[in-house]
Amino acid sequence: MRAILGQLVGAWVAGSVLLGTVALVLVSDTGTLPFRPLDTLSAGALLGVLLLVAALFLVLFVLYWRTADASWLPDGARPAVLWSVLVGGGGLVGWGFAAVVTSAPSSPSRSSWCSPTWPAGCRSR
Image 1 (cartoon, rainbow, N blue to C red):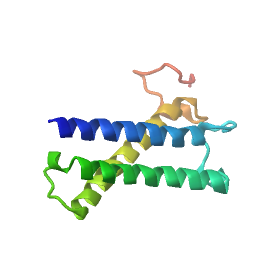
Image 2 (image 1 turned 180 degrees about the vertical axis):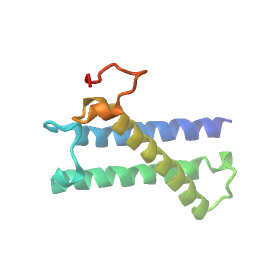
Image 3 (image 1 turned 90 degrees about the vertical axis):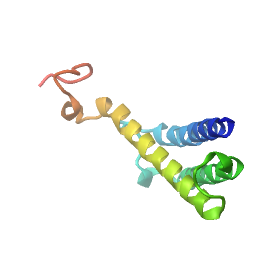
């Protein structure tokens, strides 16, 4: 049970720190947009974002190696890669969804996100 808790806490901390740093890069100096598109980043900032995402997968790989006994997967490199890709990919999808939902009410087309049950922040039609 302790190893499972280690996996959960380790993945949460790594994702929060690394993807939080990516978020800071993407929301700085945005102008009228809620976040900066990747094609507007400088080469150094884009490289930094890519290195942070790669670091996330590397940290997840090392985390699996340290807590492999908590997993139902067998020991070895292939299961570690599989676990890292599944956990990291799921985290990126969730992070992207949260970013879109969070930035939607402040976007120019926010009226398309409004519903009758959630009028707060919506323009009148």
